[in-house]
Image (cartoon, rainbow, N blue to C red; front, side, top):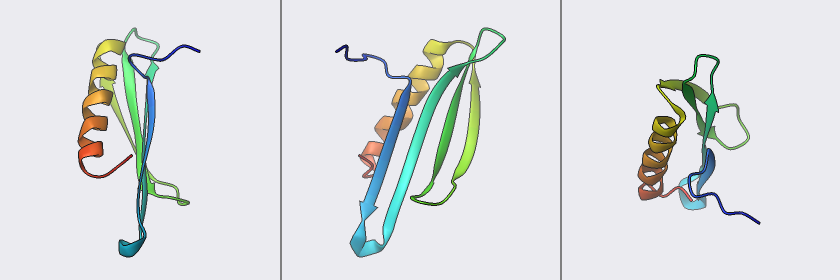
Length: 80
């Protein structure tokens, strides 16, 4: 089993039954046809189709860095 040092996809969830909050935040890095990479983000309520946003980056390294920064921010807000 190999552990990824720089993951290219993350699924985070935040569930607080007292507040009726059940959310997800998914991020995936994919290479594009032009040598760059895209960070695809989807978020919303669990069980319902979420919103999608695509951010284009010059290379895969920049996209992975953006993914890790966003994941750190989401973890501070209670996503696990």
